[in-house]
Length: 536
Image (tube, rainbow, N blue to C red; front, top):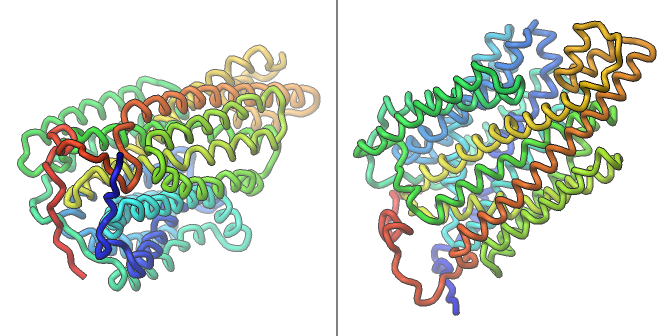
């Protein structure tokens, strides 16, 4: 038997909170757009600024490096100075950095301004999620609100290439950065009136050495994983990951000795928070196959980037819907079962994609992508909801930072691990199919990657170009199939984790009647009765 545990009427969200949610959606969409829109502008800005290949990599990657490296620090800083204050400060910094990026006059200037954008972006993500959990105290409303937040982020990622393509059709490359200025101005004007202020009541301070150790741990790992995804496991990339892991161990050791740690390790003793964060990280792995989907659309099917992005649009729209289905299901069944059911649908979607190479056809690929999107919503939305809902209000900043850092690591690991699988399959498949008589340099480029083979085809002519093109297309289709099969296995594994590790969580807004009082393992800080300082 179960009883309702909905929030009292005076704690249920009203008009002001929903207006605040709309305001918080603006920076969330923008941050997601900023991560993906640059890929469309990169060829043009590289030509205008004279950026070399290494500089291009830093232009695209430095933003994500700074966001991932500073999330934990900014989550704690928001607890101390106030989440709204940190959000608005980050919004102002993001506006200035966006304008500087748009009018960069050299690759070095653009890299520096992208780094500043990353610092500003790291203040926005934990602040938005933390404010949402405070504004929506009713479990049902909170679940829906986090689903909206997650939908804005995933929707922005999907829309990025489309928005970038449209802007570049009418304006210069700097327009993709100026897009952020009016959005942040709206946030700065409306935020003080629509968003409440929250800060942790216990105060404390930031430990500078912990900040440095966290950066020394996270940045090399993310960098190493990105390099592995591009070049395969080499000595430098493996060493970077190993160095990051070593600094991570030192960082965790220091947190255990501090009275006021940057990262409260007691968070991980909660038996809901821990598996929910694991689900977030491993769900990020499922994004690794998307790179090969894009390559298949552009290199095998010959679609220009904008049309390829439009073919991905139904997947993004379906994700927006499925994120709202998850909270509704979780009101009737245990969240673990809703997540597991969604992951079964994800596995079925990737199963369709795994047969694209054999049967071909854009529509089979599209059906698979839509199925993946329909199933991933409950997992993405509910894992964040469970992670945040398991923590008391004064720890929500740290919980949000950990959850988003886990997502960043998951995506980086997915791109690296699944990228290695796809690249290895591509190279094995094309090795014996490359036509004889190719110049040694072109042969090596074609064996290295599918984009390299496409470049070699453009330099060749006649029958050799046609044969190499066919060989590369076949190898890339086989690689897509292989990455889809790996994704099927990951989705199945996550379904098992959800059922075994989270089945103790009752349906949203309900609790088990006669449930025992919280134990140290399930509630590391005792009953969640503490209230943060609240300001209008």
